[in-house]
Length: 485
Image: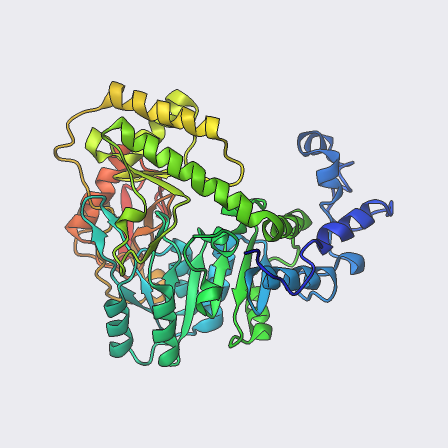
């Protein structure tokens, strides 16, 4: 059954306004200084005249992102309708900006927020900014795959019971690997105790438009959701949506967004959101049906190679893996004796195949609307050849991706505290004051305020040896860490 909308989803008001503007032949005595590309011919040659010609400043015919009253406001209304939200906000600072605005709108200094520890670093960055206190629900771990799963219902219930003064519960929907918690149940638990439920849907845009996919946050009744439209939604990198439900004060959310978001919103990014929303509203069901079919085909072919495990809905257990996003092509590599990051590097360096990420035990090939079956066949044959050329004994390899944290103080207190820089090997037992993570996926191994344990140090050293891109620390080589003085 086709989705019914209140508004005319064939419209793309920002795109339409830019097309009208292009025909007006306006003489630009405003910014940007390249003046429709004339002042920077190298840039114009690289990006094209059509692109730089609509890289323009806010003006009355084109509205203003900070205070939209016309075409941007209409684009936001269409997005809210398409996603089934009360309000939608165009975000040009990436989903990081959407996540942080969501948390800053819900929490202030000293407030508690219940969340899984396997969140993106943008979540903990937001806690640094606002001073909220995290109450972590440590997720279960799949022992074979070494990955963290979703939040179990009884763990969330216990966290709510033990922290009745918490203001919000946050959920990943889904995780990077495609794992979904029981979102409807968690929303109900939060609402029954007067808490908000927030969803990080950086990897779940397609839930709103496909069929047979896990429930979306707005359908489940969540109060806010951050949508990474540029991931599976087809818009330009760094463009996202923030969605809110009926209980959220939209005017206050706009004020929070305006605290940190640029006053010079990119019309390239905004028009890409507008055009991509229209495409998904009109054709999303058909688009994502094809993506699911491609992912299922690839899973079957990869599992037929032997040695790899492309996992899917068979992981579902009704609780910590309540549902699974079967567009995600996540592949366990340890059984061929290679860490995920090693397969990631070989695919890029030897086969010219760039996948989304590799970690200690897995790789993720991100499938979406632009993928083709012949590209998947190339990936499958490359994986078969890698197994034949590089397979070795997996004995002694680290298997656990998730390390349970020991929280000593709030992220904000630790980040701004007096600190000293120590060699990595001397940091055991100290309290970290910065981030350490493999990027992607950007889930911290260490966050400010957490105790540096022997296990964490072993993980950091192992990830460095295997070639993970380690980010977050002041020392770019990660030979030293900042710890509380």
